[in-house]
Amino acid sequence: MKNKIKILITGADGYLGSLISLELAKLDYISLIRTSRKEKTENGFIKLDVRCEKESDDVISSTIPDIIIHTAALSNILTCEKNPKEAYRTNTLGCYNLAKSANKLGIKIIYLSSLASKNSKLIYGKSKLYGEKHIRDVTAGYQIIYLSMVFGLTPNIKSHRPFNKILNALINKTSISQDNIWEFQPTYTKHLIAVLILLIDHGFKDNDITLTTHEHCTMYKISCDLIGKSLTFSEKKYFNRDLINNNTNDLEIMDLPTLHYTKMLHELKNEIQSYLVLNNKKIEVDN
Image 1 (cartoon, rainbow, N blue to C red):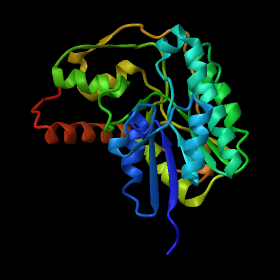
Image 2 (cartoon, rainbow, N blue to C red; image 1 turned 180 degrees about the vertical axis):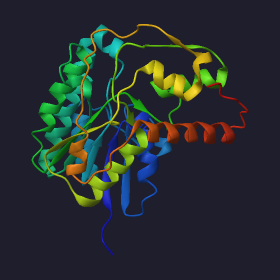
Image 3 (spheres, rainbow, N blue to C red; image 1 turned 135 degrees about the vertical axis):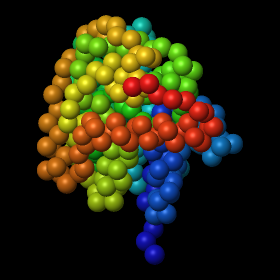
């Protein structure tokens, strides 16, 4: 019997980290090490603040994972603009600390970055870009995955991510104001999970990939498509955001799955319906 693949997840209690932990835990050939910046040892978490070089080194050297999946980040754009020092400490220095520790033991890293790092005028994007440069120094192998605005149900329904805000608007029957100007190609959580598993199973070394749908949309469109126009109002909310056209053919070249907006929308509606049924909430969606 082969040894299990040991994977350490940073930010395992976050919006994406909690979902990745949930899905990878279902695979019997993977052994998970879940870390959090907060003290959560009673729930099977190990405390790891990636901003601290010693703490990063101590945790990684004591657990010696085969792969680190780095999801921990300061992702709120307004918070990063107001606190640039903290943005760089978390998103840039955190990558440096992990890369340095990984190189001591020959550990691979999968880094969840952001399309904001490409042509970004924002502190958030710049801090992620500089973090990528440190990940590229990982000698055992790295994978940088560029994500756009991410949608999908995760165990962390309290985070202030766009999908959670849309879900809460539906549950509470409160209106939500969404931007109708900036166009982007969204990222779907299930698409991310499928690609991560393929990368873990088949290996990776020094690649960049972008995970989005083929098609563009606005926040207003996706909100209307998910919970209806009666709850969604249009307003210009985003500034200094670049339109980035992603060539999703790169995924096909690497034999990775691609995704159309209509398929994502169908799956998201099913996720919402399952969540409402599970939580005994009888809500009709007005399209």
